Length: 66
Ligand SMILES: [Zn+2]
Image (cartoon, rainbow, N blue to C red):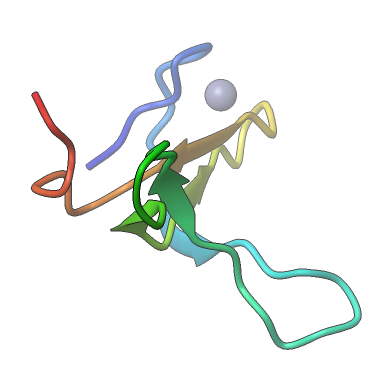
């Protein structure tokens, strides 16, 4: 469960970002100067039904180098 950073209301999760006018979504990636950019995955979106705050997050962070 994801809470709004502003008002602590429970957010509506599992929404997605789409490019308007097309069926495409967007993909997040880490820029790598030597190779192709490394894909992290599709961002997910949570929306606060109370204050309309939008929060973008990833479910899978195993591709992040930490
Ligand atoms: Zn909120």
